[in-house]
Every structure is written in C-alpha cells, then in structure tokens.
Length: 200
Image (cartoon, rainbow, N blue to C red; front, side, top):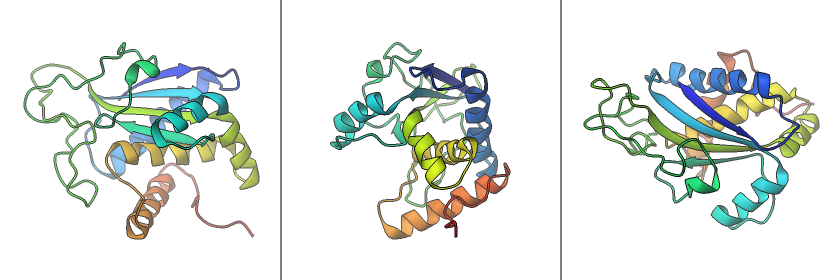
C-alpha cells in the first residue's frame, strides 16, 4: 500500500503519521481479506480552516469536521488536493481490479471504491482508491472530549475513512450499525478499544 501524504498544518507529527495511517489502513484490508499491495491512497493532513472549505464545497456544510473521504467515483476535484497525481488520479489498469475487491464488499453490491475494472498482474500500476482529509484541531478536541488518546482516535478515523473509500456508508441506521460493528472489530486487531463505547 502506498500512502501519499500532504501535510498542511504544523501540528501534525509528520514522522509518525504516515506509519499510523498505513497500519490502520492495512488493518482494514487484512480484516476484509482484500489485496492491498497495489493500492494507493492520498491523504491530506490539514486543519479546521481548510477542511471547513472542503466540507462546504463538497457537502454544503459550512463547518469543520474530523475527516472527509473522497472515493475515486466521487465528484472531488483532485487538483484541490494538490496530491502527487497532479490532478490526474485514475486507475490505469486493463481488466480486473488489482485490489481484489471485485465482489459485494459493502453489502450493497458496490465494487471497488476506485471504480476501476483492471488487472495489475501485467504491470505494477497502483490502483488509486481515493483521498481522505483529516483536520488536526477537530480530532485533537474530540479525542480529549471522549477521553481517548489522539493516536487511537486517529486510527479509528482512518479505518472509518478507508471503509468509505471501499464503498461503505452510514446514511441508513442499518448501514451505520454494520459499519460501526466492522470498525470496532478492525480496531481490535490493532489494539484499539471500542470507539463507540460511552465513557462513564
């Protein structure tokens, strides 16, 4: 898995955030038994001001949030992200998706979130799954309010975001319950407790 990280806020610890994100993302693929060697994810580590702009632009909500996820099939403008693809993110494959998720991964018959239908066996071309943006100030505030470490809260948000990139959602109650249960089980594999358990 290749994680391209753009850091636009000095609060982020650039030395450890890449490993944290990679480990949490790989845990998702391991739990779902999906191939991830050729997967690429772009990540923006930013702050409340920038994520508020993205949230307003793409969701119509004029306020910061902890994380935003943009699967390849979304209407996200990648040049806004200033990611390494130079605004030309795509899956340049030819037959079947190399990430191995050519099945009903999200219980709603959605295929790979990247939308590609290609085969990477003939060449080592990455499958770009999508982009995620994280806001430091919101994540820091939430972790303190919820009595969690910043790292554990961030790992939860990475898992949550990667599941979104793979096609999972939580709009309907049933979808939300399934996604929350899946997040909890994945987080257990990397030593993070149930993020939805209310603190007394």
